[in-house]
Image (cartoon, rainbow, N blue to C red; front, side, top):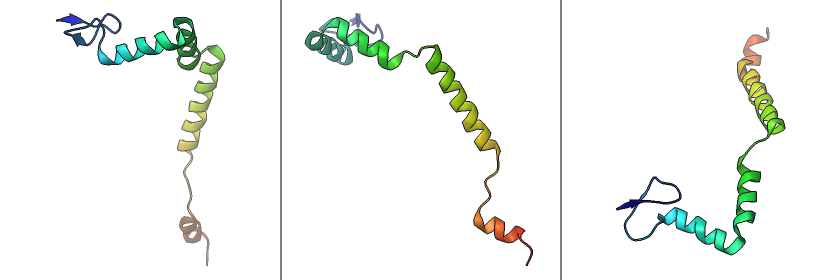
Length: 81
């Protein structure tokens, strides 16, 4: 029993790679190592600008959650008759 050569988490009995890592390896064989690496870096790793945008979006969402939402029925109750 060996651990997967790529993820080092799954146990492998017959091959060097677990099922998911074998799929990744097959994709790399089709598209090339450099192309797959470029796609992974582009899609999963955030640069400073993207991080700052994410932080600002989270702050805006938190501010919106803090302001209470007033429904139409609550407005009717608050209005004098």
